Image (cartoon, rainbow, N blue to C red):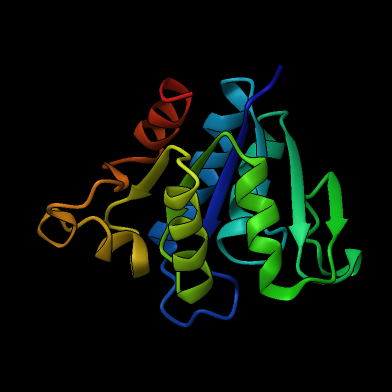
Amino acid sequence: MKKLIAVSGSNGTDENLTEFALRSAEEVGHWIAKKGGVLICGGRAGIMEAAAKGAKKAGGSTIGILPGSKEEANRFIDIAIPTHLSYYRNYVLISSSDAVIGIAGRWGTLNELSLALDLGKPTIVLKGSGGWADILSKKELLKGLKRKPLIAQSAKEAVELAFDLR
């Protein structure tokens, strides 16, 4: 059975979203597809769209768990699942995944990464991508916590960790 690797990150309205983060998300999607996994994400713009684009370029499959209707899906989503649950759809996304990779991110990403850790999902953050991924990359912040994300230095390392952990 193919692994479902979730990519969580900033949407297209994040004014702090960098070219590095978007390029890294596309690489993450590429490596997920190359390793035979299926990319699952929130299905919208920003990090989600970049990751789905990378997966499609590499011949992979993509699933979008949307907060509203199918029309919200970016053009690289193969299977759009409209939930009409708004942010509650985060639980559906994370509980459906085998591992979660966080890139950049704001409050919705923090919610997804927290859910992943609470549910015991292998969770990886990409250091240097900005937002909550960078905050959660600070080892001193995580000291003493039982559940914490692994920190990847590159897109390829993040995907390798996601596959190795499941």
